[in-house]
Image 1 (tube, rainbow, N blue to C red):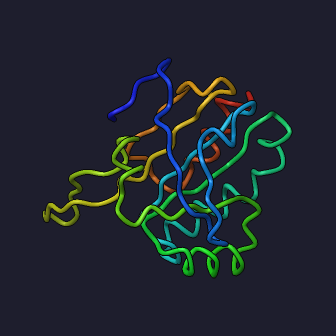
Image 2 (cartoon, helix red, strand yellow):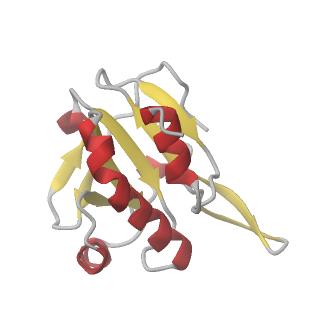
Length: 155
């Protein structure tokens, strides 16, 4: 990834599912879980987003705010959030500028074919704005359970 643990998280400003601007500095003072996912309404991304939804309460109680980031347009994010009752912001990164800053955009391989795209990743930013944890090229299934074990001490 292009960022490092212990270093300041790259600043960003993106529009959420309602078209409102959200910036990294707006989340200061709490832990932030940024999960980068390729495409709303696909099986892996839907499963991962629903896992985050189902874990929102315990993560929020521990001081974390969850935010999803994808290249999807704002309108699609609004539909995705509504259909799956996601209680957190989804941010649109159509030109993948923020994904690139966070190391979540690059060369992918699928069935022997190489192409540029979003690499499913999660970055945990502490309350001071520094990168606490990095998870690159994660699998959708089981990733949130791993986060809960590591961040909340669950078994």
